[in-house]
Length: 111
Image (cartoon, rainbow, N blue to C red):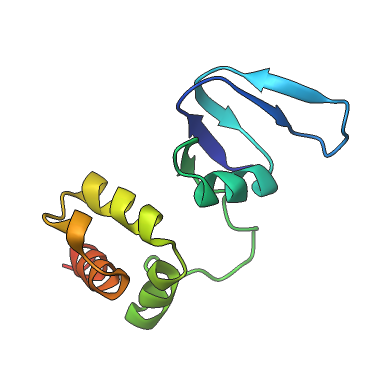
């Protein structure tokens, strides 16, 4: 299960059953992947801080290829890209277009 850091208490349905909503306090919680996906689309709610481990036996390179990395970054929204850029110290990200944000973030991860 991924870990998500919520910025404030949130009432959320973790099980998929309508009557089983719970209130999670602000902080880090293990949540189902569908909740982590929702947080990725709604960064004002919080952020995914730890992704689930790959299944045992899967082949995973230590870093994505440049093409894979660019595709991953391009799949994020402008708001998510700006949030990452701010966290990674990319200057001027508030006025960048999506393609510029992807290029800047792609450059930060290399080296």
